[in-house]
Length: 445
Image (cartoon, rainbow, N blue to C red; front, side, top):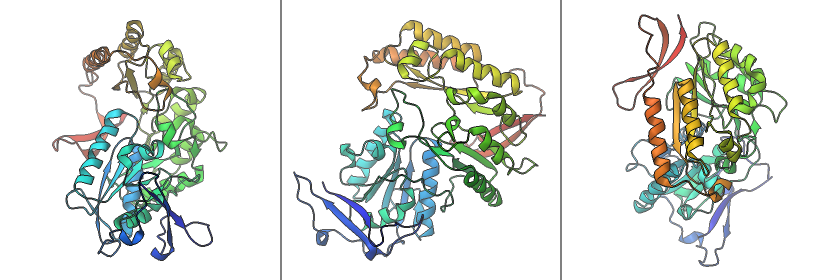
């Protein structure tokens, strides 16, 4: 396989975000594979269609940050004339935005890539898989675009439609926040506040892809909030790999950012703010400030704080950098200071070395707090992570623990006692079943 990297020709300064170079200003660099001679460009099939007139199918796996990246890529492609389609069969090219958190997500990507190759569709693969595992065999013969190269997706698509294999992965600057965007839900802006994280969890592959913490400035984020409110957005989701770590690389912190954003929100609560996932270590020192913001009438009284295990021994093996008691402090403090707050958490069942006692401690923690949401995952070893080399818990035990914890969570009755209460809610979407509505609770009236 040869890798053809898209190189800028000229002054070397690169193109501004969203700018498409003239085609004669795009160079190619062929890397020869020892086992296979490089194709000559004259042998490459060239699309007979005018660039910008084709149809693109975009499939997104993973988190809200990935969804935001896909919306930015869709916006740029649309602004240059490409049509977007939900039908893969009708599309001229497939753009697959991938997730590397769990094995099932990557397996789904593998299946989709295989289908695309069988259908002779030009493929562009974006997201965390190519960024963190660029040499996986499934990526042979497809173009890839890195997580910080989404502002050059138009170039990658154009070269791919011409038959070239393009790889863009290396860059140290963040994509601009004011790129064109096509939102999946026109009322919801997913706002990435930083990329990467400061942690080094032994099971996590995302750090390999998203890298070390890189934060957008407070001014740029507050400016983006003002812009999207003017565009008619009614809900803003702050997204990142760890919201709580925001700003530590640029000398600010999360409360500073949140206060700046809240100052831009309409006083009539016509646009609401949802604070994204935050790990315990980086909010412990800001709990009172964050609680004050969560009490604001324009901010949802909700926070996603992953615990992953109720056992300190397992948290140490995960390198999570907090104890169960510190997690309890976060939950207890916010519950005391924010009336009606709902807290979501995550659990990994069957982490290497997890004993029956460790799992029992996790069950006890979940029963004690009866969290509004519990995202339960079975442990999946991710290649290249320290946890992948640890001794595994037998899969039948992992599955049994997952089922048991799911049964515990499903036994909770969170709406008991709410009869007769009046709640202010926000309808944001139609559920996947096409019948139910998706709603968020504002505040108790």
